[in-house]
Image 1 (cartoon, one colour):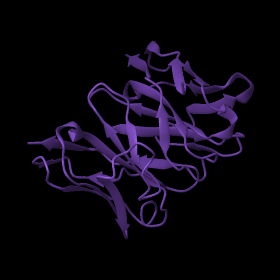
Image 2 (cartoon, chains in turn blue, purple; image 1 turned 120 degrees about the vertical axis):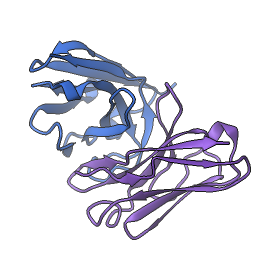
Image 3 (cartoon, chains in turn purple, brown; image 1 turned 60 degrees about the horizontal axis):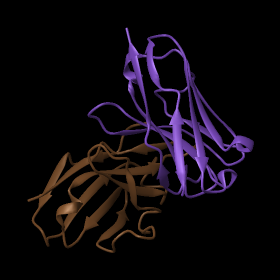
Image 4 (cartoon, chains in turn orange, cyan; image 1 turned 90 degrees about the vertical axis):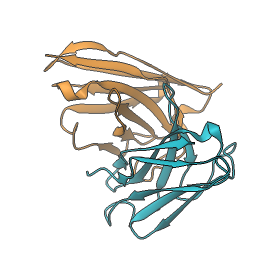
Length: 123
Length: 110
C-alpha cells in the first residue's frame, strides 16, 4: 500500500522552531519529487515547499521563504520540513505530498497525500 | 505569489453539468500547462482529479474534464452526482520551483 505518514506536529510558541517528518512506503521514494502543503483551520490549501527527487531543485512559498527549510533523506524514505521563527499564521494541518513526477521544477500533480500533522502556534 | 482566483461556490442539480473557473496570470496559468485540480471532502485529504491541464488519473471518472484558455483554467463536471459535493481547488506551477493554489470552490449538489 502506498502511504505517507507525517509526524512532528504539536503546540509551539511563536518564534520557536519545529521539525516535521514524513516517511513514505509502498513506492520508490527516490523516484519522485515531494512537497509540503498546509491548510489552516477552515481555510483553503496552500503549497508550502517542494523538493526534487535528488534535492537539486527546491522551492518555497513567499510566506515561508527564509524561515522554513525542506530536505529529504532517500536512504530513509523520508522528507523533512524545518520550521523556524514560527508565527501565529503558520497554524495549520501540514500534509506531506508525493508528486507524480521527479522534479520540483516541473511538478505534475500531488497524487498521494498523507493524513497530515497539525501545527498550532500560540502567543 | 498571488493565489489563483476561484468562485467561492457553485451549485447544480443531479445530472447537470457545472464548470469551475480558475483565473491566474501570465506568471502561472497562462504560461505553464502544469495545472491540476483537487477534490476535498470534509475531514479528508485532497484527491487529484486532473493533472497537466486535462489528464485524468487512473480511477477518476470521465465525468471530470479540464481545459485552459489564456490565463483561465476550467474544471467541468458532467452528470453531477451527490458524491461530487465537495471543495475543489486548482493549482498551477508558477516558475522557479513554486506552485500556487486557488482559494477553492464549494460545490453543492442540490
